[in-house]
Length: 189
Image (cartoon, rainbow, N blue to C red; front, side, top):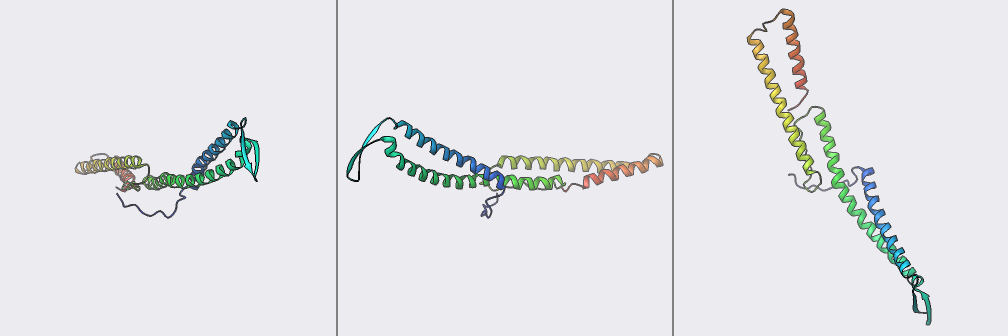
């Protein structure tokens, strides 16, 4: 495993990450509003005796606590949202980063490079996917080498038999083998 490297860019896939952050932030804000509304409704029918400016005042509890409730919920929602934004940014980076890296490696495999290794930071998510992709490219590499060995065996066999076929078939066999080797040479193993 590679040592953990410093992150320089937290927004790997801004669209995905912003949606991820917004979903959790909306949950925090909605929960704060629901808590405030529930407290307001619970205390709506009760009264509170308070001293304001040296006068004794009787108010409904909901009117009495409303200003403090709004300030408290705004502060808690703001702080919670900030914490959620930071945590979801880091968490989404641990998902988006490996996906970006795996997509880049898959493109190289698609171009025929079967030597690629799917390595991601040990602290990131998708470790099992990276391991599975490494097993897959290893199996493809082995099968490619096996096919190449079989092609060489066929070529050697045909050469030993001096391509015992008609002149027309001999040319066709040479072309077929040439085409087969071109396909095999597309891959880097």
